[in-house]
Length: 402
Image (cartoon, rainbow, N blue to C red; front, side, top):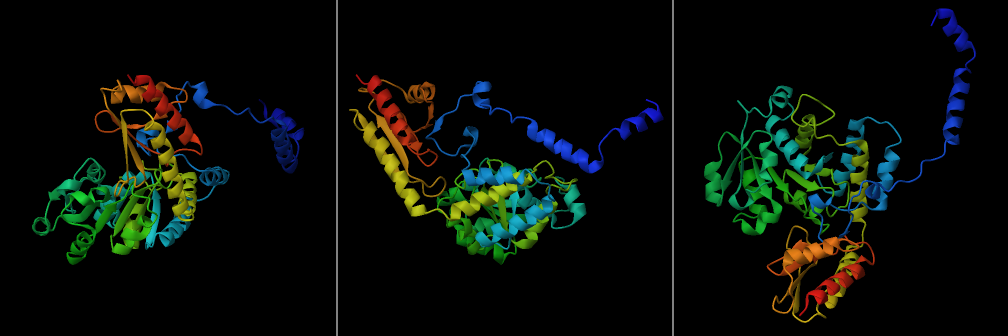
């Protein structure tokens, strides 16, 4: 176009203010798109979750307060560090920590926390990870805690040093020791318990970290380990807290949280750049935590017990069925129902039974128990879904009876 044509065209446009007004008016004239059922559209199976907050089952379902926080925060721009600062202060106050930050899940919290311990606030060290030449490079843990989750720590380049006794731990400490790591759900299997682990860290001036990923409820665990003296505590957001599954919390000593954040987005040139948490997840995590601490936990527990009892009573109506209710001591600390059957009277394998529940309408997920048994929990059920679960379990057990 020629310059005079451009000027001529501009002359017929409304002034800036009017243009904005026209644009806004046009937007309001466009009808809102019809709501889409993407699950149906993409042919995806949804199910009643009587299994628990498993990652491969997409964790927990977010309550309305969390969804509202996510949607509302999506409508404005804000500096990400400002959000982390303010939300971190609130989370730290709730959880009795000096500081806190929202991370991309519990795994990310462990990576960033470990990185912060190794590098401090030294930008050269931050840029160096996961190459640890000249840096502390070993993390000590108990043999019973040395399971797959240590790979989060190993992302930073560290070597895991397993020990079993206090004497072994003392001998393993050297100038390369960066941290003592504790896996909370494995505590009963270890010879060194929480308080002694913390005391050993303080004795040798070595930071201690506790992974409590799925260890809420009880609500007191949100601050118990901070009060106990762990320097860092990591928790999942999308399990018992019912926040975004892709979020978590790292909390603890202020200097270590500050160092961890230097290893994290929105900064680059660090090991955590890919572990982004958007503002919506940060706000959602805060809303989930705030909601969780204000729940009537005694009332909630009673509801869970009633749901379990309803399903248990339905299953026991079938001859050859025995049931047991238990509560895991630490992780996923909720009433858990085991339903077992006599294979001479009920002709179905555990895997076949799970598949029949899965293929039914509605689809139901439970987890495998011992041979010829299943386990289920009820804390992810929506109101009245326990009746559906009870009916379907009874129906399938009766079908398989001889």
